[in-house]
Length: 398
Image (cartoon, rainbow, N blue to C red; front, side, top):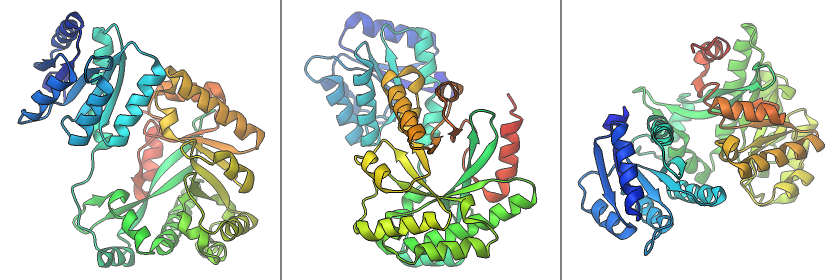
């Protein structure tokens, strides 16, 4: 979508700054413009509109209903497609507001520091299509337990793979396997629509075994093509209650011709082990058999240091929420620096997730991060498309 096709509402209490924003947006060729002088009047306009605007440009410091409260109402009532925060306030506060909006499910294009300029607005609005694609969800899908069992039995749920590359030289070294449900009609259903039901119905072990076996088969094919990559497989915390998991995983990978030390099992930091003694025993046995263990989404939970001290992790994955935009947000950068320092002291490999821009890449390289994963390198692809995706990464078109 070109900028001229966007509809934008400016919500700003200062008359002069509101007029300047409208003028700059007009200069960018945006024709669908509307305005409001405060949160209450903006809500009234949005509620009476037949079609929500594409983007709200919102000032935070407004009398009456401030921009933070206004964004909360907009998000909960789905009154706009995306929001841009405009303010001269503390960047840490702007980051908090953006995180809040995303938690409500509202697309956030970013923040624009005042005074506004044409270039600042063009840069943030120019990401509308990318953000829309990133947040775009599948159509509502009716899923039953019987559907899922059939899907697993018929190999419709399959691993798609996203590469991880070394920041020092760009060399692909691993792939993360991500579950996708490719139905007979060709429609691809994303995990958000079926993983919760799988967990609720106690089918997690079956899915994990399936993903591990399928991923190992793809790895063996790539090995034969001269593409040597480690595998990263997500493991649900429910699996930690399964005392037979370590032996079963070892048998699966050996049956498929893959060594355990070529497989990394990822556990989310927010995982809570119902039976700590059993869970730690399972993880210890997995390490004993040679599997790598990765703490995923590091920094998003509340027990990072405790888990790192108790569990024999070999890898730390920095959550994409810290990586995105960190090159211009000192607090995010500080979290990454602290994570890297901790990983070095604990002798852990590090993967930064959500690397989407050259600026993200350069910042991580400057800080000495080991590996990167994200859309800058490649989006998740089916196994048969991975060699081509790696080829595009090695020989970029631009």
